[in-house]
Image 1: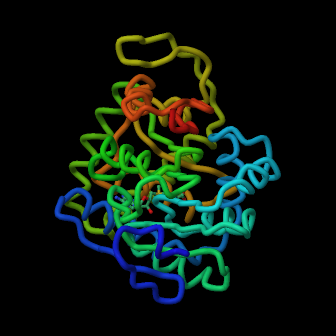
Image 2: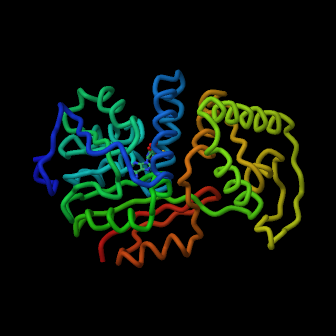
Length: 315
Ligand SMILES: C[S@@+](CC[C@H](N)C(=O)[O-])C[C@H]1O[C@@H](n2cnc3c(N)ncnc32)[C@H](O)[C@@H]1O
């Protein structure tokens, strides 16, 4: 069953296939390395359940499902489900449990795919592949639900990846996708500058930086101070009342801190932001252009400060 989805013969070892670990582009290789580092450090952290619970609830909101039951009902009509850029595979395993009749495949370029295959090897309808979601090896139109959550902007050429994922989506299927949203100008400039600088840092330095950003976020947030900010449209800064940590976070520097996640998970969220070389941000028009360029129809569209997301079908 799995074999017939691919253009070439596959070498399945239990529930795992290794396509390629290397990419010719320097930025994609660096991105893979830092995600491998992040996932190997964080896959057995204590409070992952908190993170997963938050992520599942957020997923429903991002892609327009009213509840987990609604998602289960939606997936009951899908035979092949693909989690493109699955990280540690917790969403792929969620889909596999909600849709036991379906084949679920998670793919990630980093070592996370291997870690996920070991962790979830008892789930019979779930497979993992280490490879590039810009070139999945799937035949055209074979996947009934492609989910690309919080990933595409980390790929070497997100527009090309988007076209590829649209192509493998079946004619009656859907493709859901999330992109980072462009933020205020000072934050965008710092982010870009920072990302170039961080390429020269070792992993230890990146973790140190992430922990310092967590501490800054925590300190600012503990001030519990609100400020009134004027509109500064030329810098893209929206006026209004802000908590001071949120104001700095959205407009100048990502210094993530979430009390109920604690320091380790906050550190890895900060690591996630500044470490990968590939992390493109989009305006709403730029995101929607990818949708129309690929002849897709919008089924659901969502926007919030951090991102745009949606569910799309073939016209
Ligand atoms: C922010 S994480 C999101 C992981 C997961 N979707 C989640 O929501 O937890 C981004 C993931 O994209 C993966 N990634 C980046 N570029 C990729 C590519 N070209 N092909 C496959 N995975 C890629 C990274 O290895 C990383 O695991």
